[in-house]
Image 1 (tube, one colour):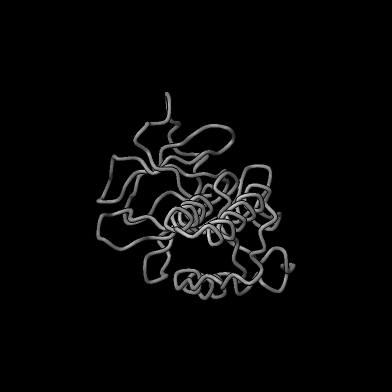
Image 2: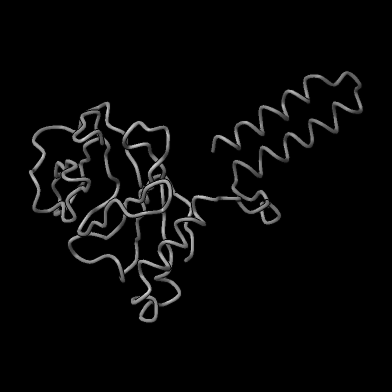
Length: 198
């Protein structure tokens, strides 16, 4: 949506800079056409270049290694992931939250996922989680604490011996409202994150 607004502002800026009447009419027509197509959702973006995403490629390679024994049992639709980058330990290098939203990785208790280091190595594998995940401002062992939803309740996860707990449902339940200063990550459903194959 931000990109659409920026495109519209750019076109309007070009429109306002024109001085010739004929040019104004052409620019006005282009602006109106673009505006109607953007708002109506009919703009043709089929020729838009693919996103060059080194992080997605790193995660894809790591998932092919981590899930090597499972891949033969997965359907093509099972082999998709979502990710979001966040610096969990303030080392100026992002860690990657990796999640799935299909029946192979999700059940009645929630979904599985990973937290990977910037180099692709595994910090954590987690199960029975609902998305999104919240990163709090408090930290343990130099890593931010997490709030993960499981079974309809939020659970407080703290780093212990270099790992977060794998099963949020058995961790301490969060009492009260979500902290306003928490950051929502891996919001698969509301943020409409890009889906990647592996």
